[in-house]
Length: 345
Image (cartoon, rainbow, N blue to C red; front, top):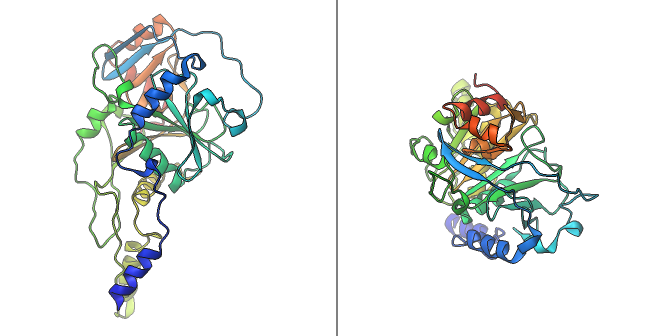
């Protein structure tokens, strides 16, 4: 009877829509390439003069130009979106839209924006993390979020950014992925604990690349979903029973059926807690297939370099030749990152 009831309950749960953004084989990279080709003159990419790999970073030089004209109102409101830039007007149940970045530094650079005018600085939720991770995975690249102006955000309407792996190219770096990928792959692959009977318990690690920077990275379980078994309440009495009950509650505090998005939310919550970011402090979030990284921020620029989340993925943009040359010096990129991030304790 119990098994039959469990099957009926599982069948009654709402299922994710079957549109292709939930499919494992969604090729977002190809879709963005096609959208970029179709957009033509609607895009105004940065004029990258040089791009080279130095000291573990992909350094780009794009001379400053006159700032673009700023339209009145919210540029991410659906009524104001340039139709030439829209890749998909509605994704993930209509809660988001996919559009091309009008001023990209990398080819096929896209934005995932919320349909509602949600503040950029408000803490991310389960749906945000799920949508961003799915897009980053489908683009075989990087997804990232700048929490506010200090962290590199330029608009108050909630938005995330997607850069396909194939867009990260430059002299000395011809791999179809961001430079940080090497660092992620070098991490131990079994620090997290997972089984079919307990929820995913994220474990934070750090990267040598970001030494001196307050950050944490969590590797996610390779399985897309997992279930949480509900144990019986202990029949013990006294203090031992109380302690056992508390352990049981902690082991069962998954409020859902164990979807992969819950693992993302747990990882994000752990990192916010560990980095003292639970009150909305500035931070960057970076996501790739199977991993999530958070960096605590204290300044937007250092040594003349404006830094957003891409800086911690191993990509820095210089706006003049002198700054570009300075970033090629040994240790210069790390100095910039330490200059904008909260210092590691």
